[in-house]
Length: 168
Image (cartoon, rainbow, N blue to C red; front, side):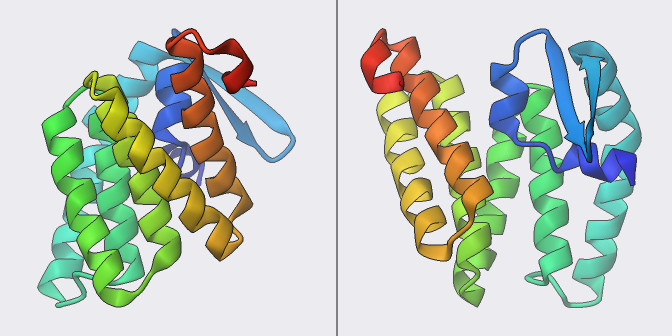
C-alpha cells in the first residue's frame, strides 16, 4: 500500500519540492531524499508495474482503468528519473485511451502531467497552455485535487517567470 501511495504522487509535487520529497499519507508525512525515492521506485517498482501493464494488455484491457493507472504511474517514475521521452510516451498513450473512453478525470490528470513535462523541457508556453486545459477539465469534473495540481503548476510557472502577484 505504501509504495502504491507514493507512486500516485503528483509529478509536479515531486519536481517542485526540491531535494526532499514529502508525501502525505493519512495524517502522517513521510519525507524521502530524492535519490532514495528514485532508486526505490525506478529500480524496484517499475518492473512490477511493467509486468502488470503487460498482463492487462494481454487480457485485451488496454484502456481499462487499471492499465491507465499503471501507464500513468510508470510515466511518473520516468518523469522523476528525468526520462522525459519515456514519460511523455506513456502519458500520451494514457491520454489517448482516456479520450477514447471518455474518461475526463484521467484526461485532466494526464494533461497536467504533460504540462509539467513541457515546463521541465523549457517549453513554458506549451506547459502553461496544457495546465490551463487541465484546470478547465478539473473544474468541469469537480476534481478538487486535480484542480489544485493545475493551479500549482500555473503558480510555479508564474513564480519562475518572476510574476509574483500572478503566482499568488
